[in-house]
Image (tube, rainbow, N blue to C red; front, side, top):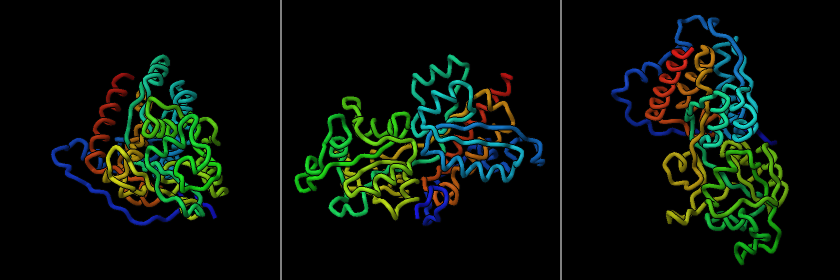
Length: 336
């Protein structure tokens, strides 16, 4: 039975914490029990928060939402999976959503669109992902691909049959499943694997639903797809993750995992994950509270790693994000 990225119990994983000395303000924010900054009465904050954007960050934001509204039941948070670019272009930069999930950084064009509508995006890093290439469980002839072979498969006018990639591979057509062009996962894969010189092929089954990628790959022995690690880990019994050999680093074949993403071995497909919040919205107590809560819990092994399947922030990263967030909140309040 297929499981989503939220509902699977996962093995324990502990990221290195690093040193957190000398940052008193951020440390106080980090240990704050009342994220609205205004006392102990949870009924003091209420309102609605709309979130759109990345399907990769979606399960993490959903998990944070569940935890947050348990503490603040008068805050209504809706989360849509629209793809990073779809969220920026159709919702966030139009002022229709306060927060956008993003599996890549906002582009210059998106910043311009936001600016034209009076929206200033505030970037908040929330986790690290290991973008995962998956194949069918019966593909026992395939365990690893080089970055050059991935480019050969996914580039425009790319390989048609597996034997075009390696002579010893089957003379069978490649079935391809992947994220739509509005997805930040698509953008990141494009940048990391194909680069500026090569376009992504268009003759593949594209979708904003990562579970559709899983279903497609599960149904064909000769299929390949890519998605965020959380969706693979939630379906690791139905599809197989393969290793990636980064020809630029000579590091050999490395399988995606929380450990290899955290320690930098899994290149070039480990990536930071973000939420972006409209700066003006941070003047609203319930929006500021949710963002504070999100970053405060971004180091949580139980939520980020075990429940969802990403690498939590280190304590140093958390302190940096909390400090930057607090500055943005104070700026927003002073301008309203």
